[in-house]
Each structure stands twice: as structure tokens, then as C-alpha cells.
Length: 427
Image (tube, rainbow, N blue to C red):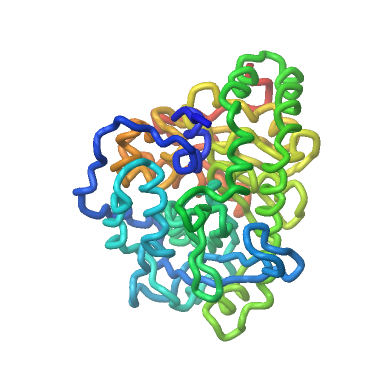
């Protein structure tokens, strides 16, 4: 199966999981030193901890009979101190990026320099004594993506008073650590994508073509008709989406079961489950939409460039606020509007020019094979990070905390950002 770079850019995974890696490109530049994460912009110090939960009711699809589903959580939160050991950037170790590098056709060591990067968060420090409770954000990475690749965004949100639980979906990420210390990946022992993983990705082979038809249509009923036809053929994707929604539910349900004297347990007691926002990048953003549709604990959802919205949102009402952030990928911008305009209330849309799919992650700082393969946009990395942080923080400030967003109100201007009026049809 030949997969074009345009199709691969549809989801972060498609850069890694294509069965025919792009050939004939020069060797990636692996001589650069490690990058520095941008400083958090909020007043709080940042802490981080991790835990794992097991779902005894679900068998692990990607493992042998009798193995139960495990989910890893990486937590970021306001901390009581700036002292202590900074967390490593690659929370799952070098395996988190080595499989990615090899799938891109470059040296397996192309991103080993990231092992030297340290975050601004301190490991296992106590939560800040104030405020009494923290609004809670649940985050999911993209399908086959790198869990650590959103650190700059998540620790910035924590510096502004949010607790963020980053959910690592095992066997469908570049790396996830299980309770026994084993690290598992979407790649099998031979370095090839697992069959179940390929089954999902193969369903997206005509996605660019289909989204082009959707975005050319000027009638929203016609857009929904085309989308329904496409979604009806995504059997494996539907199963994966349900699995990720169930993972999210599991993490939220199990907060009360964490050891009370552990850092995780102390943090869990401080979480305000009345103010829950759910968001993600790519498949993680799609998961946010489907989760919010079925779980009333979700007060607001946000999708970072996950197109289209899979699942049943096309025919069901969420009724709460939802924000869609589009990159400038050709034929994709606006492709899910016909779904969100009917399901969410209110629906917000933000377009970011000069960006591609991966620019909403830390990968924009990495360079190397990703830059060589034109997988990144033209915005400066620090500018892209600033824009992404501002959009997400101000949205959740408005819908969860009641603080009006200057950006969404059109009073804070980034020349690269367009806030769209979704009160009327967008065509």
C-alpha cells in the first residue's frame, strides 16, 4: 500500500505507519543539540507524576488471552515548589522516538538527542496548597503518536492552575509503560506496525479525497451525507475510538481509587470533577468529541486538527461548548463543521495559517526527519507554541472558569489566526 505524504499528514501516525517509507531523501540532520522547551507562562510551579489503571472488564486487544487493558496516566499540575528533579522530556525513554525515526527512513538514533531535554516540571512534588481545587483537563495524543510530544502545552496549562491528565493509549502510541515496567508500542517486535494498528490506518487511505468532496460542497446536508457514507465504512476505526473513549472513562472513574498518601492520590482529592474539559490532538481530539457526547461529566471539548470527527456525533447532540482548531492543511479545513454546528452549543472554530498537522505539538521544535519530509509548517516553533497555548488556555478559561477570552471575542489578534463565526453556515 503506497501512502502519500499528504495522506500521512492527516494524522500524526501516518508519518510513522506507512508501509512504504519515502525514499530518495537526504539523510536527516541528527547533529543538532537538544531543544529547549518554552517556559510556562503561568504563575504556578509545575509538578508531574504518573500512574496506571487496569480495567478488569476489558481484555487487551493487542495482547494474549486473559490480559486486561492497562492505561498509563501522565499528570501535570500546579506544584507547591520549584525545587526537585526536573522530569525528563521523554517519559517513556528513547523507545518513544526511535521507532518513529526508523519509520521515517532515517537513522534510528535521529532523535536520541531528545533524551537530554528536561521539562520545567518537578517529579512527584506535592500539589500547590491553593487554590482549594483544580479544574481538570483530560488529554489524548494522536493515533500512533508520541505521548511526550505535547509537554510544552500541558505544563503551560498546569502553570495557569489546571490539572492535566495525559492519557497514554497502549499499543497505539510510540511507547507506553505498563505496570510491570515493560514498554509497548504500536510496532511489533520486528519493528513493523501491528496488524490491528494497520487495520485502522488502512481505512483512512481515501480520507483526503473524501474530505475534498466535503469541503467543496456548499450545502451542509450534502456535507453530512458524504461524511456519513465515509464514516459508515470505518469499522476498525470505530472500535479503536470506542477503546479510547473507554480508556478516558476508566481514568476518570478510577481517580477515587488511587492510594491516598501517594502524590497521585493527593492530587486526585484536589480535582474539581464539576469542571472537566476534554481535548486532544488528531485522534485524541476526535476522542474528546465522542467522549463528551456520552459522558455528562464533560463540560467542554476541544479538537486539535483531528479531521473528520469519527463516531456518532454526526447524528447526536452534545449540547455543550466545543472548539475545533484547524491547521492550514489543504482540503481539510472546515470538513467537520457540519457535524459540530449541529451537535455542539456553542461551537467555536479557529483556523491557524502557515501550519500543518504536527505544528500543534512539540514536534515543531524537533526538526530532523520531520522537517526534511515537509511534515511541518512555516511558522517559527516558538510562535506556533504561543498560539496553540493561547487558544487552548483561553478557551477553557472561558467555558470552565467564566473568564471571557479576548481571542475568541476578536480582541486579541494573531495575524496567523482567524476566529470564525459559526452562528451561520460557513459557506
